[in-house]
Image (cartoon, rainbow, N blue to C red):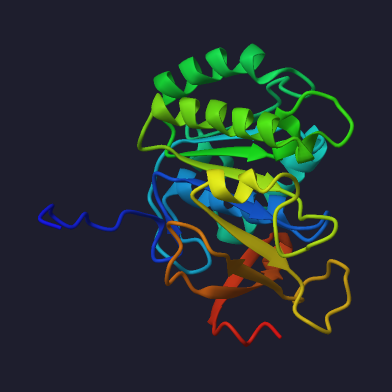
Length: 251
């Protein structure tokens, strides 16, 4: 109790704490990659995310799931929506496929640890958690393997303690309010959010249709607010508009 109280350090002011291992989970097609790419561009360019101030720095986005054409198209449209050019991302946003899919964590973690130690990115994104796992049926429910995987992720972070790691994932098939897989996932990350549809909304992606970004119980998200997020398409571009809401307003 006599220790000095640490200052709050934010990746996104009063929404995403910095220097933690975080997770966003949602069903396929709800928009977690869109959200993560928006965040990546905000950090890389030092611009606002959902209207909130961000920490500026390098972003390493490990996209093992989306096609190259999708990456190019979505980033280009987001830059247009923000009135930015690709030059603003030079040397700041590194996106690509790193051939992790289907390999055992010990096969890729040493190289990734060295890469992060050299780059010291402000943000490292894994899209998605399943891309870090070797091929095996029902592997996400193997508690021992999942704990081992998260230990490798934490070892990567240890090489650059100020890096925030964001993992994208899917919800449990039986309990949609939890990340899929062994219970250790929620325990071994520092904080996680769900991204979902408000009650009554048709489940399809359309502009001007909202999703709800909701924090769940974890060690670093106490007091973090809910947000209603709406995609906009200005001037042929693309951006997200965020609105602070109360915990009951997503119903």
